[in-house]
Image 1 (spheres, one colour):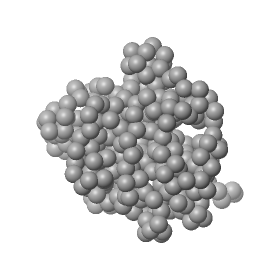
Image 2 (image 1 turned 90 degrees about the vertical axis):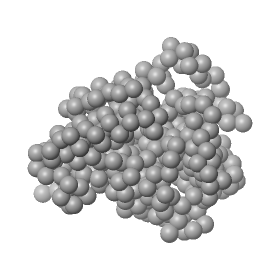
Image 3 (image 1 turned 30 degrees about the vertical axis):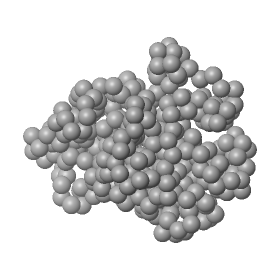
Image 4 (image 1 turned 180 degrees about the vertical axis):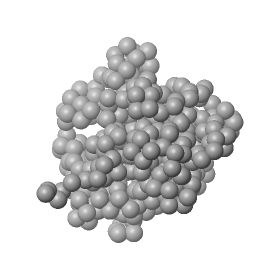
Length: 335
C-alpha cells in the first residue's frame, strides 16, 4: 500500500508550496517568494489556525463530542473552523459582519455553518461581531468560543508549521518577511519563529488604511490611520495577544488602489488569482525588496485566492463604484 497518504482534512492542512513570483522578482532583482496558502483544503491560511484552535480545545477539555464551535470572523477562519467541525463531529456557529463578500457567506452556509450576520460596528460596541460571538457561546451548553484574536493556539499554528516550512523551503537563505495582520496569529507566529532562527531577517508589517498597527510598530503607540479599507479580515486597531508575539523591525502602509492594481497585475502577468490580503502582502514584499535592495530573498503569505472576491475585486461595476478601476500598465502604481 502507498505510504504517502494524508489522514483526512487535518492531514491536508499546511505544507503548502513556496513559489517564486517571477514578475515581482524580475522587477526588483530579488527573489520574492509567496507561501501559497490558498492551496490549503479550506482555501486559506486560516485553516492552520482553525485546526490548532480546535485540537487545543479538545486537549484542554473545552470541546466535547457533539459540541458547537462558535466564532466571530470576517469569513476565512469561519470556513476553516466549519470544515474542521464537520470532520470532527461538531456544529459550527459563525458570526460575521454583513459587509463581507457574499461568496464567503454563501460558502459558509454551503459547508453547513449556522451564519449570523451583524452590522459592522467598532470593537468598543457590544454589537461588534467579536462580542456577539462570545455571547452566543456563553448562551449554549457544550460550546467553544474560538476567540481567534486572543487564543494563542492561533499563533502557535504558525510558529510550529508556517514559519518552519518557510525556513526549510528556503534552506535558511532568507533576508526578509512581510505580511499584513488580521488577528496577529500569522505575523506573530511566523516572525517570532524566523527571528529565532536568524535574527538578521528583516520582519515587516504592511497595514491597510484605517488600521492602527503601522503606528504601533513604528512609534509604540496604537494610532489609527485615517480612512477605511476594502480589504477583508486584516487591519486591526488593538494589540491582540497573538500580535504581541510578533518580532518586527518596521511597518509599511498600503492603499486600496495598490491592492487592486497588484491583484490584477499578478493575475495578468503571473496567473495568480489572489484575494485582497494576499495582494496587499505582495505590495509589502515590493516595499521591502526596494528597501533592502537587489539580491535579497523575501517571503510573504498568499493568504487566499481571488474566488471569494469575484463580485468585488474582479467586478468592473463594483470597482467603478469604489473608484478603484485598475489603470496601471505595469508596476508604476507603487512609485
